[in-house]
Length: 552
Image 1 (cartoon, rainbow, N blue to C red):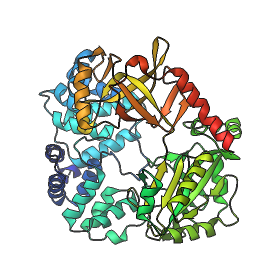
Image 2: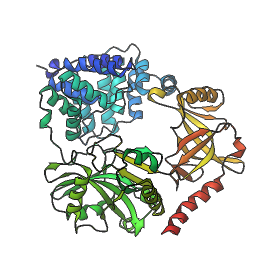
Image 3: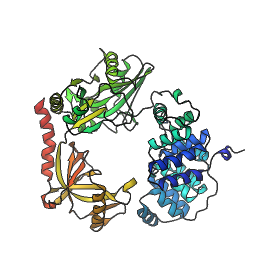
Image 4: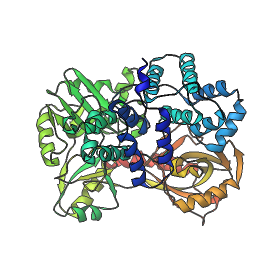
């Protein structure tokens, strides 16, 4: 007997997605999902929960499908016999691969009745197959068995974005509602196991307390809320705050057990570019998870632009390691020798961290210095000194704070000063995603170089919804070149952008890129002829280095 006969139909999953996407109300989304999850058995419930997070596999599984948009497009073209131009026209209409595939397939009749079990098994098979030809054949077979609307959501799962307004936190809330368990317990189980499907099963069995941390499966990083000034921080913590430099590197989580060390990024992906950090951590006894920052470092911290030269290199490069040495600046410990420390107060975690690293610090592994600031003046002085040391600003942490993975709150603040602002002109625009679908909300901007306009970056944030709606219509009427999702527009909208620093870049025509640009405001008072120049960009680029060197 085919085991998939006992599995729930993919069509019910799709109906639930459509219902969730049809409402903007959070509680209604949770109720729809909760009702659906209640109707599923343990196995299908686990599969569905993973799919609802927009993933093909649980977060803890180190698997990738390696199926890109071109392969998906090929599969649809094979089934529909449409031309590439026809497919492009349909895509431009929707701006969404899944919805475009649904329309392209039209009245395609499925050759089977897909189940969640069969979809999960096919995705596992796709991950195991090598080469586009093998993957394409399997995709065509899967899509042939599915209804057009099912193909729509299969593509969304494969590409990692359901676009129905369903964040992972809402899936956790729905699991809690369906099982009658506290949401905090579901979230903790999901965080510890790295598998929301396992969290669902534990919740259904009323065994969430049994969830255990899996080493070498990263947990979410605690995040800091931005603060405008030292005054704002001290209003929350007048009795004192723990302060550290805010470093300009890569936030990293280090897991160590036995003779194995692994680093993970904020996106929970493994970091493999810095093998020289492994041996120093292996020399520290015990089993632990550390939170810190990987920095380019030679006597003092180097700019992020230096560290960036080592990113994306999977094979060791001895000379590059010598030219751009790195250090792991540690500022927290989340787990140590069998004890999870997330609920332990920061002051106690710091004491344990100091004991762990006592006499074991090295050039490659350092304990981040910390200072208690008890007044606005002390914090302002610390912030200014951190900037003078070449760092981004200051981290301000409540002494009694727990470590709350993936959450921002009032326990940790970050104080940063924008490096500078530039007046630039928008030269091309793209359609956004999610609530900004159908709106031209992603702006590429340029500076002047005599009679030329040269791009220096792209910004997505900073404008109000009303401004974006108004600009969308404005740009539609001033399009010079239309490529569907991307439009080159008349250079007439001037904006002021802030950014953290400037780096060299081959991607932009100017040869430079603004790091972390955000729109400060529209500048209708300025003409395109009055925007900043490439010479100004070069001046700021040089200034960021001379400022650091002069303060050392």
